[in-house]
Amino acid sequence: MIRARQPRRLFVLSCLAACASLTAGSALAQANYPNKPIRLVVPFAAGGSTDLSARLVAEFAGRELGQSIVVENKGGAGGSLGMEQVARAAPDGYTIGMATVSTHGSNPAVYPKLNYDPIKDFAPVTNVVAIPSVFAVHPSVPAKTMQEFIALVRANPGKYSFASPGAGSLGHVNIENFMMLAKLDLLHVPYKGAGLALNDAVAGQVNAITDNLSSTLPHVKSGRLRALAVLGATRSPLLPNVPTYAELGYKEMGEGGWFGIVAPAGTPQAIVARLNSAIHKAMLNPEFKRKVEESGGTLVPTTPDGFKVQIQQAMARYARVAKAANIKLD
Image 1 (cartoon, one colour):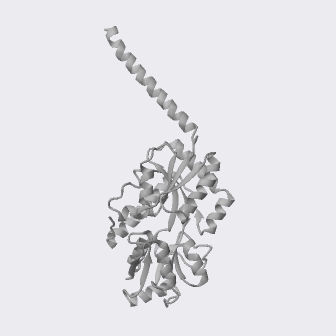
Image 2 (tube, rainbow, N blue to C red):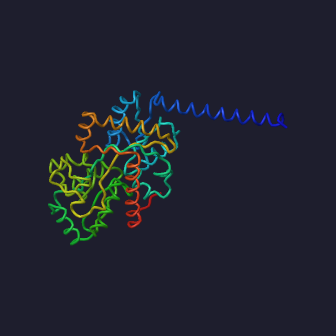
Image 3 (tube, helix red, strand yellow):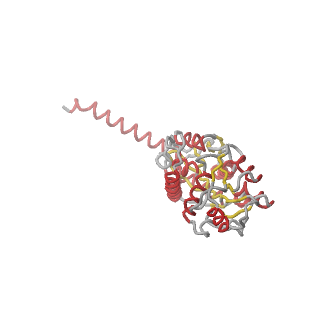
């Protein structure tokens, strides 16, 4: 009887040994992380605010980690293609992504066939940069303040228009949210990109627009656009006289855009913690902070759990707006 059971016992022991070896190897790999370059996927084209923030993370966090972080731009479908690539990557810490309030907030609300789940498919690492957006009107609009603009639009429903980078874009959904909260009727004019929308707003072809502070600021300073509200947690030092939506009584607008780092779901907690620590140390660099503030942004380091909460809040807000405004994209 004893001899008959011996092969099974040896088999079990060999399996346990193999599992122990794999566990030890995995622990060693995590302890040595990173030992090769890291890929940082940016779900938008080069040159925009998301890309610039990612390149700061790559440069300064790469120094802290002792490895290169290589930025890879993968645009398309409002950032969805790049985020899908991150979601499907191996959860080993060598592919991470730049998540935005679009990819993890508004996209899940407006794309019913989105090929990733913002919560289930990712391991949040940290939020990094908050970038406010600005609601601005052409100087031909006879309103000096947001209160005056609201009164003007209510008195002339459907007369005034706003530009967006496209149907279902963050700019579109944000103004739809504002229209519902303020009980306004504006005409939506979608464009194929933020640049085209901004150009026509500056030219007076449309009456209003909401766009990133960094893009809008030069036109506000030149007098070609008039800023009426800032979508951010606080007033921007670059536009100190422009109130936030919250100050105007519209807290449900949220706190503006953000860019943070996520990894594929299943990435070991030790690696997530290592990335979080390195990025937070990078954010303490005065040069990092200076470059962010020059673009109109602020640093918003979080814990992984804290970033997850911010993602969930954005998802809930934009789901409400998309449902109420019946915004759906294929």
